[in-house]
Every structure is written in C-alpha cells, then in structure tokens.
Length: 178
Image (cartoon, rainbow, N blue to C red; front, top):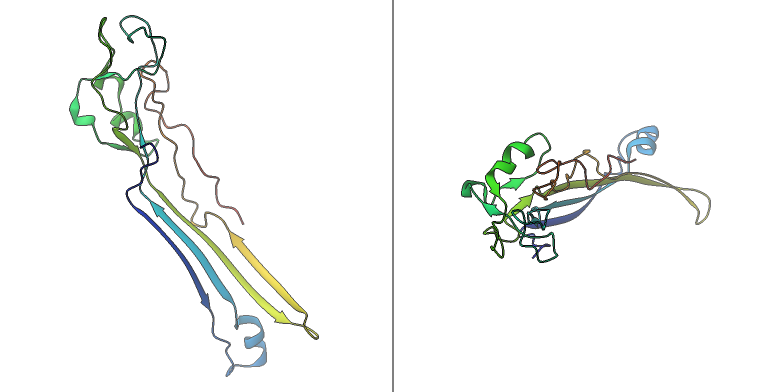
C-alpha cells in the first residue's frame, strides 16, 4: 500500500514545574508553576514506485498510459530508502533502470520498491497561569511547531524520462514556527 508505515510512535507529554513555595515571592512568581508540553511523532517512511514516464515505443508499452514501470538493470538498488537531497541522486540513478522493449507489457520492477525517509517531529509549548481578581486569570502560552526544525523531505522525481529523476526538490513540512 502507498500509505504503509510499519513503524509509528506518538507521545504526548506534560510536565508541571514545582511551585517553589520555599523560595522567595519573586522566585515563586517568575519561575514556579510553569507547564511544559510536547508532542513527539516518529514514523518510518512511506513507499513509492518508479515509472518510465513515457508511453512511446522503446520506452513504454504503447497502451495509452505513461505510468509503465521500468526494468531493473542493477537489482542492488531495490529496497533502498531515498531520504536526503544530498544523497538521492547517488542512490537512485537512471543507469540502474531500463525502458520497456517493444512487445513487453510491463517492466520487471515491482510497485512500491523504494521508501522515502521517515518523519521525526517535536511540537512544544510552555505555559503559565497567574490568578487575578476573583475567577479571572492571566494565561501566557508560547508554542512551537517543528521545534527542532527537522526537515521532512518529499520523494524524489520518479519518472525515468524526467530531468528531475532521483532528485529531491521539496519538503513536506514548513520550518520551525513560534
């Protein structure tokens, strides 16, 4: 399945700092009773398939669909995780694959034989309440999405005839946000 992720971990954590009741009033007011929250998500990468990118004789089987899978010339490339733009072209080169020959219905490569890199993300928040008069309170909260600014790269170009074959040129997430 295109959405197969055999490993996934999600954890929500909250830590409330002690009230510092033995310290002075200023220390208690400034440093006490803060709440730190985090959500940690770690997943393995999803699979992707290669395609020839053409349906003309010598490239595809001329059935009207340009999503034909190519032939594998070097089977050592199968099962690789292609996850970083700096190494994607070295791990996935066009010379490791061949186009369909005339009369051939499909290439010998399977579906979803490669994986993109996994996801590791931390969202965090720091908050505190200060009681005011009656039932009123002042609430201060600072949040960060993608706290460690970890990029999640998209899959590389998958069409063998395209100039971006094997190149990762996009991310799936935004940078750190506060």
